[in-house]
Amino acid sequence: MKSLLILFLITLSFYSCNQSSSGTGKVEGLEVSIDTVLIDTGEDFINLRSGIYFSGLSNDGKYLFNSGGTSPYLERINLETLKFEEKMDFDEDGPNAFGDYVYGVSSDVNNNLILTSHFSTSIFNIEKKKLKEYLLIGRNFEGDQLVKGEQFTSKIIPTKDYNIIFGLVENHDTGEIFFVILNEETDVLRKVKLNGFEKAKDFTVRYQQGRGATVSPQNTEIVRLGNKLVITNPVFSKIAVYDLIEENLKYYPCLPTLTAPEKVGAYTREVNSREEFNFRKIEIGKEVTFLPLMSDSTNNQYVRISILGLPKMNDKGLPEMNDHNVFISILNDAFEVIKEAAVAEGIGKLFSTPIPQKPFFKDGKVWLYLNVHDELAFVRLDLNG
Image (cartoon, rainbow, N blue to C red; front, side, top):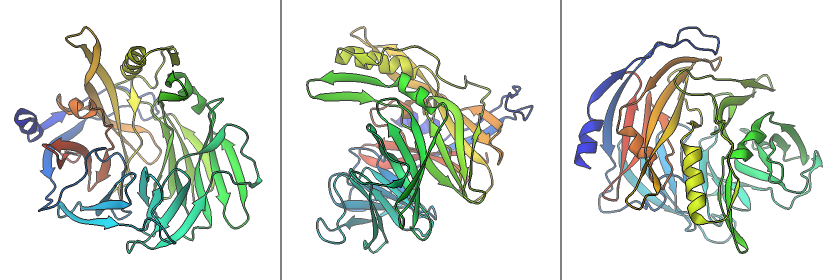
């Protein structure tokens, strides 16, 4: 661990001068400096059983809220002072109930919390008062309908007045993904199929065990970045963008220069053993995986991380994913790649743990989760050098 931490404290620079096929011509190099910070918990502790995978930033970027999962609390971490501030205990029952198994935490433009559970999504203010609840399962809509096999997935994004919500619907039979707009006052639902996003189904692995199943999906995600809703999938670099001002949906290739633009292999989706399930996941992970776009209020650019798995054989002769090549791309406001770099050897280890990374971008830096002897730390990649 000490050697890894020393590596993170070294300032490194990386350059590439490849020709971009995204229409911008030459892609410039990118200087990246690396440091680590440790969160001061005082006499408390942070539950890192799921890392920060079920966490979300406040809209102003000041706080990280980590979900207690099946327990009704959030852990509030001040990213400016680097201190654990509060364990926010919510009501288990009543009008301000937390919800069962909160697996999604985000923030709206009012800086209120959006908590996503299995059956509903609720808006809470910082005083833990429930302001709004959206029930999206088992509900009849006007306008477009949800047919058999279709349901809301991922987080929803509400407007400032909470009357309109945006989100994603997946058809689990066909793999089709839809961008949806729901008017809460009229119950009118509008569905727009996301062209090509069904390709992700070809890279989903499933192992059936009796009545249960283990699934390794390729989840489509939606995030709000300024006045745009950006929809991404790990399988390809292409994104869909809904402009909240112009009210239109467009696609952008976001073509990288250092990796392929998508996964291309042919894989068996239904497997018959745990060993085959793990092997298939590793094979798919050897191809490029694209993480969601990120941005902050400091500029009009977007940041994306992509990774390539580097498996090795263990002592039992079985492959294990224990390292990755990591790349950072900078995109302009037209979603063209303008800068790109491979990140230092050693950073890939952070993407090789059972708990997936959930990077976020704050003050010009990409923050990556690191567990240091069960203490929360972050590796920060400063893109300003």
